[in-house]
Length: 317
Ligand code: 5GP
Ligand code: MN
Image (cartoon, rainbow, N blue to C red; front, side):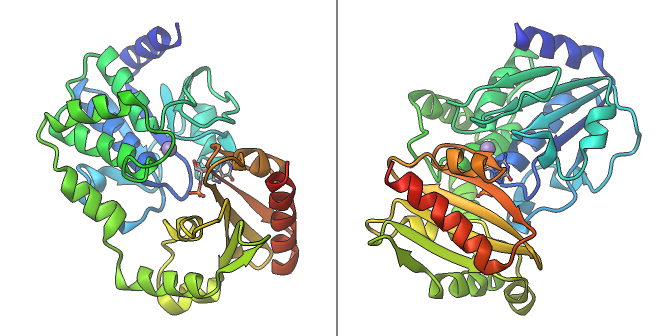
């Protein structure tokens, strides 16, 4: 069984690197830190490498252990968390490929099974939820710190237990974590409620530009590099959800300019459109109700047209 192999590989490794997806969200950071703390409990030599992350997550235990680069070329073991595709490993796929053994623990529907051992469960609402099972298999004690990281992942990837991906087990896991003394109210406030003034300014720009298309079934908005410079914020977390929350909207589209001719797409749906299918067509991936991708080599108008036209097709399928 994959879990047995994973357990054996972890127990037999000394130098381990933990990697996650680029522009890491609460589940990416939460699951990575939980794994880090757990492996330290086992006495492993662990590096957690994430070049850039939002300061929203600075309250998490061991966040200061995150490094911008690995310290050796060839780790005994590389673990990718919350990442469906090796191309999304923050530009660090070299550490992954050079490791003697490669493990992926994930919940993305379109996971490309890029590791030696892939422990992937697309029905889990968060990678952090899967991790509880892995940590327990390793006899790692779920401490308050580990619980704080895991619950952050679960809360952020379920929008605070409100998305369709929430399962009875999600509450069971959450209840178990809460029994360790984790402060759920703090996690909720820091990750889903409080926004910095800079982020608020960026959001205002995106909100002011929301266009409703297809009789209000599609919401579209965007952010440019200039917006980021002028507001001094690069934190787009949550912008795409604003469009989805408008009554009658099925698909919300958010385009963010990465580079002159490169746009990052974020899609969300409410009830019936599988946005992961749309993003796969555009070279990305994700989940049924939340997915993303990148469009390169085209102008803003072309990128906008391309993504809207794919969304329209899927709306009427
Ligand atoms: P977000 O819109 O928040 O960036 O991403 C939504 C979901 O889609 C997340 O689970 C994220 O990991 C996934 N996702 C976003 N961009 C990409 C991409 O370019 N490729 C793949 N495979 N998944 C993506
Ligand atoms: Mn996730």
